[in-house]
Image 1 (cartoon, rainbow, N blue to C red):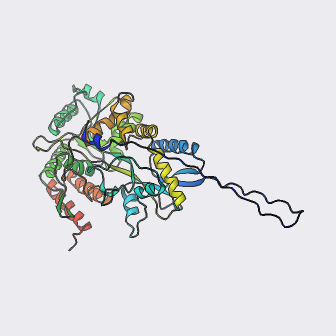
Image 2 (cartoon, one colour):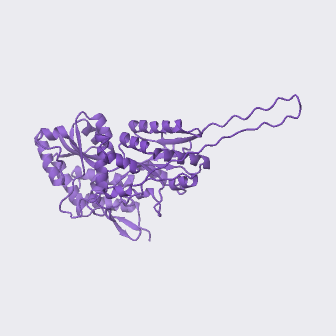
Image 3 (cartoon, helix red, strand yellow):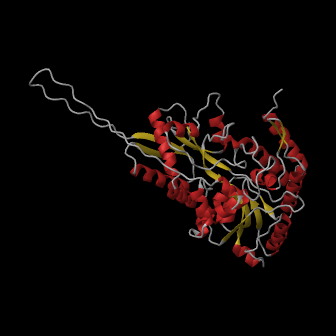
Amino acid sequence: MKPLARVLRNGVVAGIAAMVCVGFPVAAQAAKAKPAKAAEPAGPTEIRLVHQLSPEREEALQKIAARFNEGSKDYRLVVKAASWSDIDAPHMAILEGSDEDQFLAAVKPRYKALSSVMREAGVPLQTLKPPAMMDRALTDAKGQLLALPVGLSTPVLYINRKEFQRAGLNPDAPPKTWFDLQQALGQLFDAGSKCPYTVSQPGRVMIGNTSAWHNEPVAARQGKVERPAFNGMLQVKHVAMMASWHRARYLHTFDAQSEAEQRFASGECAVIAAPSSTWTDFRRKAEFDIGIAPLPYHEDFPGAPQNTLADGAAMWVAAGKKPAEYKGVARFVAFWLQPENQVAWQRESGYLPLNRAGLFAAQSDVLGADLENVKVAVAQLGNKPATVDSSASSFIGRARVLGILDEELSAVWADRKPAKEALDNAVTRVQAMFPVPR
């Protein structure tokens, strides 16, 4: 079993208790007085969860919420698509990107640590121990879980099997190295492909994950202080290679974040590097067979392939709620982590498993191609034990940093800057965002 699998070898349990409230009438002073009516029993406590998931993933979440409500008489979960700042005091919020950055930017924490919520409610939290390749913003200094990482994924390679066959390529033997992929893209181009290769979230794939995959740092560490350092030999070489592909019309990039994924799903682009979670979207939309493989690597870097990074949406619990409400939150978290619910969420959302039930489902043949993306993603994440250089940094996954990287990379594609200048400029801009304390 891969190293990540050992990290995930934990079970899940859920505890359910019940409370009954009874009212008593007050004795009448007069004999003719009518007895007071018993107080009406209180209804279930409402727990609100907001999110900004896609419609398909919202449907999967609503199914879990409906099953929870069917079995709970004390709590009723209400799931709504909305921003955490647009609705009156939600109890939980699934956040990602700039929304998550804004939520965490307050001087006084807007959240209550999930590990504390579960402990105080007396409900065990038996999920994965956050691995080093996961966004460390989700754990505190002691490694305690602050939020539930419900939407994790890692970039993988998808191929249009029909286009590979048309170009004389074997879709069952996808390219292992970037040079192999370059050769394949040349054949696809010669066979008439107008878009041999594209990338979803270029900064995340080409810098953050490519660096970890080659065991190359994105930060220079001095004690507990990190300085951005993603302008080294590997990063410059890789971006320069991508620039040459862009000039040769092998690589096509798009401004809108999801446009690359749409171009691949429509059949226009033959190969894409995209999050492992997009597997479910591609299988719903594409009218062709899709292959999935690990990211390629550069052979001349001895640490490669190492491991990639896991990031994505997390569910945060709001601060300032009542103990009874937190108990309802804890019960729902435990319910979501039950084996059958984890497998259903994993299959319908495409996200990575949170416990051994999801991991074992991905490794079994029972669900077949439904979880092929998770098989590849888990193997890639745990290809080798994470090192200091292949672990997540404190800044590389932040929305503003990724925005800077994408802006500088766009200047490379437009031939306004060479790779080294663009990455040097990105490091300078990110350093200004995170000044080193004196």
